[in-house]
Image (cartoon, rainbow, N blue to C red; front, side, top):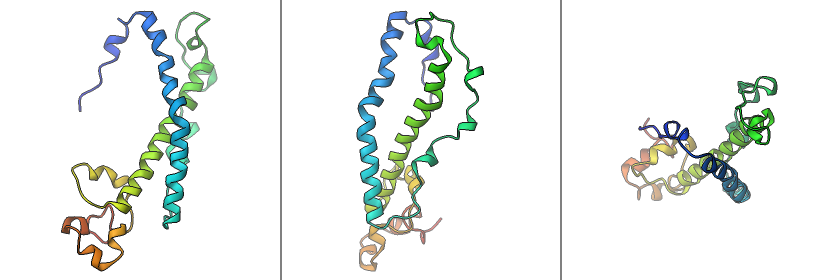
Length: 168
């Protein structure tokens, strides 16, 4: 997979572009966070109401606090104006210990829950379905009744992502 090219261009960006771009890191999270949190709650409730058990929690997606390399006293900072928040350790601690891991975990958790829903209701293969293995389930809705299983393509009947009795 090709790498994203950013570091080679950053140093040539005018300061005003960088300053203008920084708030754009936070605005999408602030705008989407409430909706994603509500969505997570609704999807998790749906899965629970249809019988879901042993579903991982949000905290399973958050890295352990002790795994972070830096504490406040040794957090690197950049040499920049004292007026700029990036000059201070609290800015980096907030971003690196709270903003990044918690927001990435929320979106990963939402995707995990949706994969479970997809495997439950739609156990029909396509070329990206192997990416849903993180949300593997014991049986899909279509595997509960023998007459429904017969309607499925043989590969969909035996797929271990949505049928624990399927081939490995």
